[in-house]
Every structure is written in C-alpha cells, then in structure tokens.
Length: 452
Image 1 (cartoon, rainbow, N blue to C red):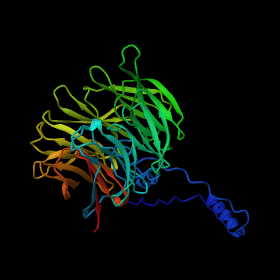
Image 2: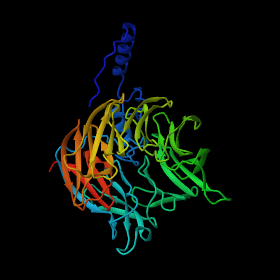
Image 3: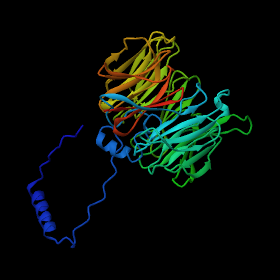
Image 4: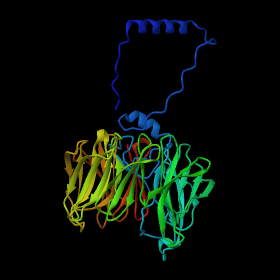
C-alpha cells in the first residue's frame, strides 16, 4: 500500500529563498562545499505507516519476537501467498510426539528461521532430552544448531544486529548467540526469567523474579535492562508477580499482566519506568494481551466468573474503549491485530471442541465486521495470524490431518492440507516474500510459500 503524496504550497518568500539556495548548490563544483545530507531519522514503529514499520522491523527480522514483535500483535509485515504450496516440512523434535509446550519460532531479516528443536530417545519424555536452537535456511536445511540442555526452552528474541537471545531451562540465565550460532556470552539474571522484549532502538528488557530466602517461593518480579555486551541493570523491583509476556508500546510504554487476588491486574508504566495506571481483571486466567495495529489501544481477554470471555479494548491511558463478550460455552483461543486497527479472535464454539470453531473480525470501534465458520467441524489451533493484505490464517485439525485456512473478509480464500497427523495447536510466523511458517505440537515445521 503506497501512501498518497501530499503537496504543501510554500509562501512566495520561502519559495524564493529555497530556489536561490538550490541554485547556489547547483553552481558548486562536485568537490566543493556541497553539504552532506543529514542522516535519516529512524522510522516510527507504528502500524499506521506500514512502509515505515517494514523498514524498522526488517532491521531485526520478519518475526523477531514471539507473536511477531514487542506489541504481541501477530501481524505480518507483508501479504501472504495468493497461490499457496507446501515448500518444505522439517521435523524439529526427534523421538517424541507429545510435549507440553510449543517450540519457539523466530524469523530473521535475511529469511533465516530460528526454531527450538529437541533430541530425545523414543522411550523417554521431553524432560530427559536435549534442547537446541537451530537456524534453518529458506530451503529447509539446518545451517547450525546450538545445545542448551534439558528442554523446554524459555523465551527467545532477535536483536538489531542478528544476535539471538535465549533463556534455557530452568530460566536463570540469558544466553546470546551470534548469527553464526556461536555463544557470545552468558549472564545469570535471577532465579526465574519469564519473558523478553525489545524497544525499537534495540534496548533489551526482561522480567524475572528471585526466590524468597524464607519460603523458597518466587517473590515479586523485577524489570531488568541488558546491554548488547551483556551488562545487566535492575530497573525496577516493585513490579508484582508478573509471570506472562509483557509489551513495549510505541513511545516506550510498558504493559504487564500481573497475578493478583482474586484476578489479574493490567499494569502500565511510562517511558520513565514509573507506574501510570493499573486495572483489575476478573480472572487469573486472563492471559491474552496485545497492542492494536495503530499502537493506540491495548487489547486484553478477561474471563468472567460465569465462564464468559470478554475482549477488552483500552486506551493507552487505561480508559475503556469497548468490550465484546462471547458465550459462556465458547473458549477464546487466540487473537491478533489486523491493518487499520482491526482485531481478530478465534473461538472454540463449545468447550468439548466438537462444535468446531469460528473466527471473528472487529473494527477499531469494536463493531463486528464478519464471522468465518468452516463448513466442516475441525478442532482449532491455538494461534492465528493476520497479514498486510487483511488475510487471517488459522490452523484446523482433525484426527487425520492438519489444514491451514486463509480467510479474507469472512470468506475462505484458500486452504491447504499439511502433512502429518492432526494435533491441536501450532505457532505461526511470517518470513521473506510472505512465506508462512507453522510449527506444531508434534514438532513439524511447515513452510508455505507462493508460486510454483
């Protein structure tokens, strides 16, 4: 989408001065006193200007963090394939077909995929194996892999210079790998690191906690800042029990989900790392949090005592913008941001999973735009992703197969059957040339691309 050009007419006096200055510059010899152009300013990390976001995002990668970026939006920077084909499938878990967590998945700026892999004996469970981070090229071949001990891995993140930051089990240390897979440094941070996030300027932050000497239980969380060379600084200690991923907003704001009693709290900090507001949610199971695509709304899921789930839209000041409730028998599985402030939600229509699923679209004001329900009754995946063309991607499973659905404006655009048995759940990422990556619970990494 190209931005329309806007012409602003200068006053006559300014136009004359500009023309005179231009004529003087043109009259200078090439080796003379022509001034060097001012360095380009970094583009704002806002989805309101997609071209700027693409440029800013590609400095770190196509998918540098879990859920795509520090906003948790699950929004791809480029359109996905129009005529899809399965380019390749790679098994990233060897010797085991069940695990409790999904493999981590990132995509760098040159198109390299970074994925968590495992190697275990077929007769053991995942806790007795070895976890690796593997770099996979665009053809599906592993370039390198680095071991990290017992699985599963914690959070992963890509830095501005291609550094891969990894938190292995048990979550006490932060490791930095070079783009070639070499260990750069290791730093012990605390007793448990929960999540990582990075500002657009490359400033890495993480949330973690230490154990109480008296009880041995994890205490209130702290926020840490880590420099490129591994220097660790504790920024704040009075954060509360934050155990889920946090977000960094367009102006450096930070948003946290903190455990509380009886429910959870949404906590917001300003760029100066001081609390600006907090809002209590109804349930300790409220765990979905992301920023809408223009960076002006914070989206959160809130589970009521009745079992009904609401999708809340809050301003960055904490004021409620709108809320949409879903039936008590349904389950909110996944959410993502779309272009122009749209929001998408995937719902399991009943708690047994036998009633199939639906995908709903809401505009920036919270009005429902459309609902997509597959003609069959598959189990839904736990993740969904939107792209720059307004297409939403969702995984659907039954006992025998996994199918990728591409939906636009409430209509099925295409669907593609993927190899392997059906297994509920998968994580999406977007890559070079709009390629779609899906890694499943059974440890299969699929690459879906366009063309022949």
